Length: 101
Image 1 (cartoon, rainbow, N blue to C red):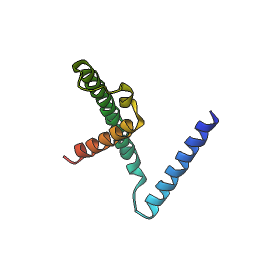
Image 2 (spheres, rainbow, N blue to C red; image 1 turned 135 degrees about the horizontal axis):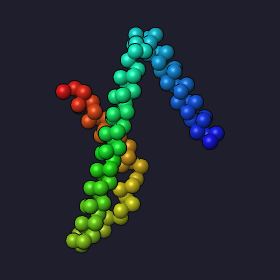
Image 3 (cartoon, one colour; image 1 turned 90 degrees about the vertical axis):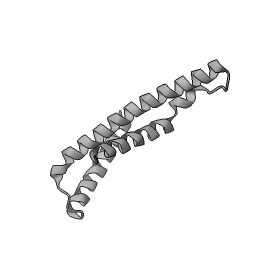
């Protein structure tokens, strides 16, 4: 519980610092924060969808290769944290693509 509070405090502190720097040096407006948060949450949601699809496809490929006898792919490979990170980047890129149309 205490570790969570420390992490949340660090995130709030860095967010406040970024907001101050952005409004003073980059001339950004605080009124844009809600739309930026909405964009971020949409991108994270899309990343979660990409993660679910990537894991599902990975498991399907793993089971298929086992059934056909081509290769043995361990299913734990598809639960790796790197797949989560790459899926979140996929979601961010796809959200940015949707914003640019």
